[in-house]
Amino acid sequence: MSDPIIRVENLRTGFGDLVLHDSVSFEVGRGEVFAILGGSGCGKTVLLKTMIGLYPPLAGRALIAGADIARADGAARLAILQRIGVMYQLGALFGSMTLAGNIRLPLEEYTALPDDAMDLVARMKLELVQLQGAGTLTPAEISGGMMKRAAIARAMALDPDIVFLDEPSGGLDPITSAELDQLILRLRASLGITFVVITHELASLFAIADRCIMLDRAAKGIIAEGKPAELRDHSPNPKVRQFFNRMAEPGAVAA
Image (cartoon, rainbow, N blue to C red; front, side, top):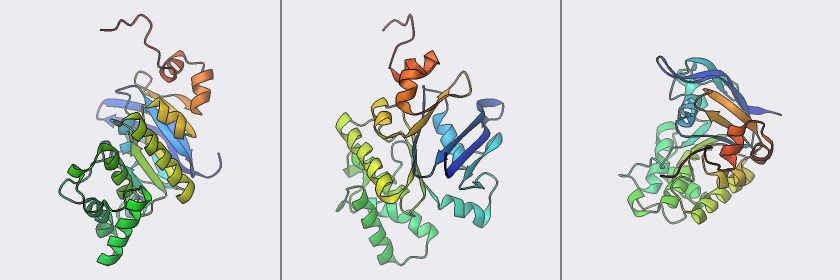
């Protein structure tokens, strides 16, 4: 791989004596759409939150453009955080703010832009996700799909190199989910953003991901890495083929 922008090296995640992942290593190339997937309880969101510095690793490290986010502090940590944006599961917009206000929040926190410039940036980010004219609405006044797009707009407020998306298609109908997939691809093509996407939606995975890793709870780590279609069709691991082809456990009985 040329020019990886993320390196995860021998990462161990968990809480106290509970280890969720052990010796996890992978790289994400600049400009890739990279997916993290796996069954329920395998720790996809914990891995993401460790990568962005919300949880400290038990061992190993996650490097963002060569910088160790867990060991950085002060101005060095702030510089790393300004290179990434995050869309949390369910959007996590502040309900007491308008959409424009949500996007302005990181600008108010991390820049010295005047009010009119922040308003302009908020309008531009909303236009990027096809929510022009929606800046005065609150999260309670918009649909689930609009909520996800507004959350992506907020994640891009500081023009990050990398955007992390936690279950962007979760809870959306198939048409809205497909539209969101196309939005991610357009943003990658037009802005060169690297996307790291947590998903269990196979249709979205095959539509947008260049490469992926599959986590497994029992293995406490990665059991497959590569292009989604190749893993679906040629993985030597039956658990991987079962996941990618939506096959029930052998002997499973429907309730």
